[in-house]
Length: 115
Image 1 (cartoon, rainbow, N blue to C red):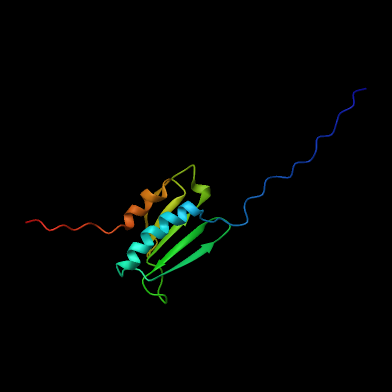
Image 2: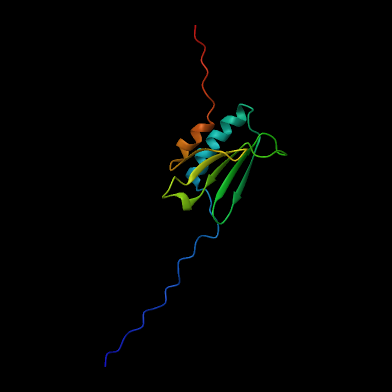
């Protein structure tokens, strides 16, 4: 007679309670945000941490809808990239794996005078 040793029960790994931006990601976001506030383009922001995504909303005025949303969706990491910039009307302006590259769509274009 063979005696089997029971294997301990391993509960399935739970998904995180909420998705958040980390310190490095906040540094990249606030670098751009600070420049745009200094230029007078943006005035306020909002932060939402949900179970499936984190959202950084950018406002021109506090009482309006956000101009842009910077979203972090870890479920999209293996597909199109977990970072996305979404416009006010819901269009995805850019999506990718590198947050700094994704935020370049929001950079003001450098205008130079030609003599």
